[in-house]
Image (cartoon, rainbow, N blue to C red):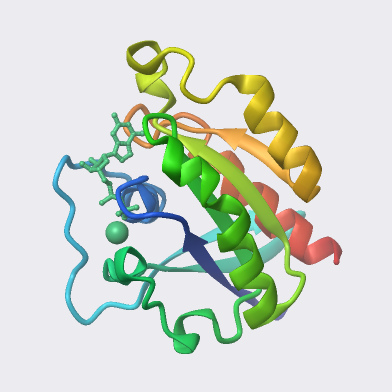
Length: 170
Ligand code: GDP
Ligand code: MG
C-alpha cells in the first residue's frame, strides 16, 4: 500500500491555540507558553484510516497571522484545513470568514473543518460566542463543526480523523 501524505494548514487569529493544537496532536503535550521551534515548518503524525496509512503534516505559522503576513508558501499544496477561533475571543470568531476566503483563494475548495477551541473556558466567558451562533456559521460555510479543548485534550483527535477521512473520500 502506498502511504498517503496530507498537508494540513491550521489557520485563525493569533492566540486561539493553533500551535498548541498541533503540538497536542503530534506530541501529546500541552504547555502554557508554547513557542514554535525555530526552523520547523510542520509536525507530523501517522494514523490508520480504513486500513490505509495516512501521514498528516500539520503546518504551523510563526505568528505571522498577527501581522496578516502569512506567505503563499504556507498555503501552497495544502490539502486540508482547520479554521480555528477561541471561545474567549470574539474577534477571532468574526475573522473566520476572511480566513476561509484566504484559503479558498490560495488553494481552492479543500476538506475543511471549523473549530471552536478553549471550551474549557466556556464558563468564564458566558455568552460571548454561543453555541447557536457558532453552529450557524458552520452551516453557512457548509463546514463540519467541532468544539475542542486542547488543554483538556477534548475532541482534538476527532478533528484530524475527520479531515483524513474526508480527504480519502474526495
Ligand atoms: P496560536 O497563536 O493560535 O498558535 O496560539 P497558541 O497555541 O500559542 O496558544 C495561545 C495560548 O492559549 C497559550 O497560552 C496556550 O497555552 C493557550 N491555549 C491553547 N489551547 C487552549 C485550550 O484549549 N484551553 C485553554 N485554557 N488555553 C489554551
Ligand atoms: Mg502559534
